[in-house]
Amino acid sequence: MWRYIFKRVLLAVVTIFIVIAVTFFLMNAIPGGPFTKEKAPDPRVQAELEERFHLNEPVGKQFLYYLENLSKGDFGISLKSGRDVSTIIKTSFGVSAKIGAFAAITALIIGLILGMVAALNRNRWPDRIIIFFTTFFVSVPSFVLATFMLLVFCLRLQWFPVWSVTNPSYFLPIVSLSLYPMAYITRLTKSSMLDVLGQDYIRTAKAKGVSRVRTIAKHALKNGVLPIVTYFGPMFAGIITGSLVVENVFTIGGLGQEFVTSINNRDYPIIMGITIFLAILLILLTLVSDLLYKVFDPRITFD
Image (cartoon, rainbow, N blue to C red; front, side, top):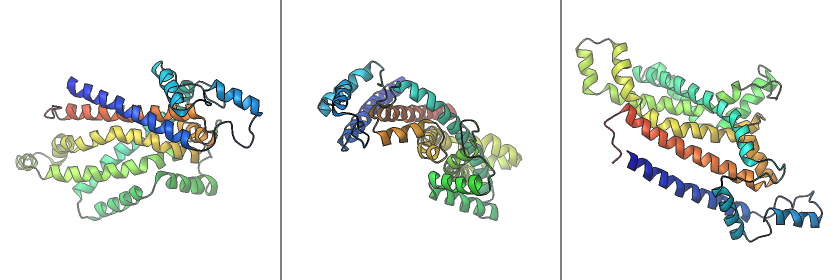
């Protein structure tokens, strides 16, 4: 197993380096810069700022400067606010992580329940209703659902306040972020449960007179949940990534709003810092999911 982990970590380092390189060069290929907007400073001040942040150097040399600082754990400072990028990520990620964790738990619990109900009522009306709604939620992007909920429940019905620092409301962002993974988990659980319920050991348990509830809870659910374990890690990272747009819809001061603002301001250090952070988060959670798969099924080997 340790050999497998070493290979995955090595592959992760290569992947993160590719993400850094691609993001850096694509970002610098866009015309303009952080100090060349409509309200640009005096040309001499602009030249001093570009020299201070090495923006007057060739792109290749800027990339080497960035890698050197990154190797020391320095993500740089914001070109606009002067704040440390690591501090910005640490502060804003707390909000995104809170919303993402609630959305992931909601999606997991409801998805498992609906998936089991659909599997146990195959081709009956509960199954058809569940599949209809899950197909709909899989098809509609989360930012469309977020915009719809904001218009209907906040502005028209006024059931929930629009988010503010003094009166935060996380309910609608959590719902809009959890609907897609909930629908996917429901379909995945149904497919997995149908496969498990057709196995010989389930028929043997029924023949021995084991109750239906105990058969499902002790035998079917344990094996049927294995695909969900693999999906949960990337799902959480996907929820955090998806919250970049949803947070902007609800004007939540999390990682998403910082990222969108940094793109509009061409704030290179924040763009790079958040991109690297999300890449590491996705790779780490995927690795954890793979390792948990072995915990649930000891027959799995990594050789």
